[in-house]
Length: 205
Image (cartoon, rainbow, N blue to C red; front, side, top):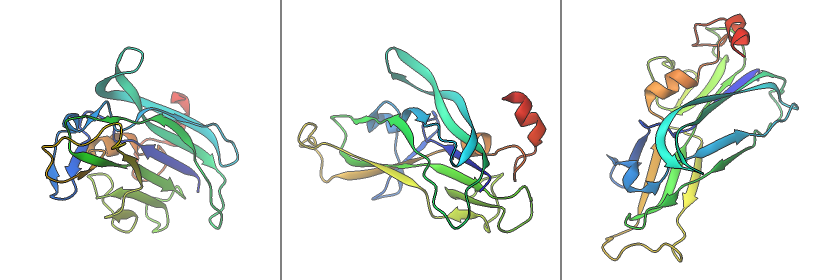
């Protein structure tokens, strides 16, 4: 693997869904803050030599003051991970609390990940795109894992934050990045489907 991009569902257009019904719900009704906040990669040159952090607008949240911008994505480049080995990409982040009035007991955080293996734009093995659904840019079912998302799960502490008596049954909520954010933050120049050259990316570092 030569490069990897990781995108978090913390933009203002992130899509939250009630798993039991498939209904889209306002994330503000479920959690205080964003699904992931202050995500920070851990520097490790054993897998990738270069790390770029991409910041962007998010729904406002309080972290030592009101923040309206946060880290949206990581870009890892100049990788040297062999295809027959496993590489761990650790990061640190803050996670939200469930609002007392919500009926949610679990929040499934779907993270968009793209593994880029070659600069080819046509090779069937050029990449593995783990985004669960295709988008305008990521439109090749040979490399997009339709139906599958890498997922983190936040569990509600029912002792400290019990469900309201009005809840008929507990709910599970999933949240994922919207398609426009995927197409904006997941591409890495020099790899499909990005249009920019590798040189222009380096000049922007």
